Length: 405
View 1 (cartoon, rainbow, N blue to C red):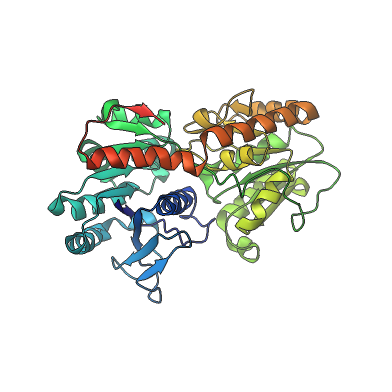
View 2 (view 1 turned 135 degrees about the vertical axis):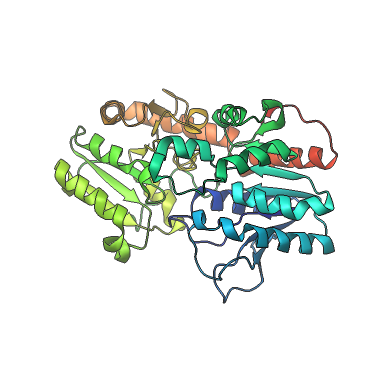
C-alpha cells in the first residue's frame, strides 16, 4: 500500500527529549520503518521548522519524510500550531491529488484536522491516533493547559468522522466513548519497543558511575506532567538510594531550564539534593545501558496516554514502578513486571520501591517477566501487524469491529 503518515509537530528526524519531542516521534519513526520494511510505500508529512531542511529526507528503513511548508520555517510550540493547519491540509490535498495514497494515518489532533482537509477531496480513508486527548489534558492540567480552546470539539469531530480511531490503550477507548466515539469504531493497538536495542546485559561503559547505593532511574521529556517531583518526594522515604533523571536539554543547558531548576530546588528543600542527579539529554544509544544500571525505573506522571518508558525498562529486564494511569494499566502487570501505585502518592511509591530494593530475587523475577512480556506483546512487528490489518480493512471499506491487537 501507499501510506501517508501525518505528524504535524513530531518528526521522526527530531532529537528526543525536548518539550515537544518524545513518544510520538518514536512511534511514527518505528512504525514507518517497520511498514516500509514490509514493502509498503510510506511517506511521513511533518511541518518544516527550519528553512535549511531539504524537501524530502529518506529514512534508513526506506520511508521518506516530507517537510510541509505551513507557518514560519522555525520551531513553534505545538500548542501554537493550530492556525497553520489549514495551510498544512491544503498542501496535502494538492500533493495527494497528484499521487493518491491508499490510506492516511494521522497522529495527534492537529494532524487529524490537516489530514481530513487533504483527504476529503480524494476520498482517502483516514485512520486517527490521538496520542493524547484534550479532555484528559484539561482534566489534569486545568488552567495550565495551553491547548487551543477548539481542541476538544475538533477531536470529537475527527473521532466521529474518520474511518477508524486507533487507540494505544484500553483506557483511551473509555475516554473516546465520553467524546461520543462508539467503541465499535475504535481498534486498540499499543505502542512498541525495539527489543533488539533495549535488551538486558548491555555493557554499562559510559553510564554515570554508581555509588555504593541503589539506583532509581526516571527518564523522558523534562515537563511537569511527567511527575518527577513525585519521584523526588518518594526518595525522601527510600534510604541509601540515588535518583537519576535523564531527559531534557543537553547537560550544559540544564541551568537555564525552568523545570530542571524547579526539581533541583525541590530536592534541596527535601534534603535529598545529594542523591538526585539530572543528566539532561542522553544519547539514545546509551539508554539501554543506563536503564540496565538501575535497580528499578520510576514512571510517575499524573496521567500518561501510553508511555514508552515502561516498555523500554521491561525490554531491558528492569522492574517498573509506575502510576496507575492511562497506558500503564495495560503495559505494566502489577506484581508481575513491577508495581502500579496511585498517582500523586509519594508514600505508596516509596513503599513499592522499598519492597523491590529489599529483595534481589524479586527484582530479577520481575525483570525477567518484563522482558518476556515485551517480547510477547510490544515488539514493533506486533504493533505493525495490528496497524496493517486496520489499514487493509479501511481501504476495503469493511466494517471493523472493536478489537484489541
